[in-house]
Length: 215
Image (tube, rainbow, N blue to C red; front, top):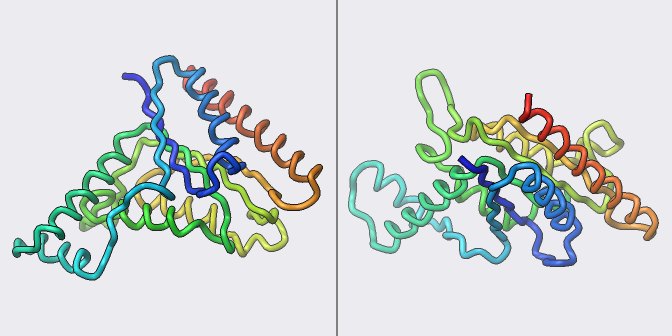
């Protein structure tokens, strides 16, 4: 079966987004290394995601207990279920993730909140929590105006990559790779060097993954 790739865009900047540019280059390499692979793009900044309002959240408990709910609540949970199934239908998920105030954009967080549902993305058993995304791969193209990452001064402020890794692990995705793009703010030569380094890292990752798939 051909590999299915999903590109989740977490930046609202469109063609100006540097993380999207690097992610697209990376995806081109993945497709070239996997003939027949298909790619779908989901821009969470423009997608119509279901709103997790009070009535919708309360409706979840009502549905679990077999009680009646309003039609709009039932429709919202049907849409949420479709979003989870859609996400889990892909083999590889590439995220374009800019850092906003040490974290991730609220639109991406809304998407994560939408699909991280018990019985859909994970389940709880007598042995603990089991993520239902096992066997999938995730790649984070993480950009930031400042070079904040693990092992650097200020690394403890990274609630971008560390959060994404923790969340992915929670839903069972432990094969996670990171391409850093930092800094994206400063002298033009510094930003250009960061872009060149990110492109090189993306190409090296594609090469490593391609080599591993042939072993």
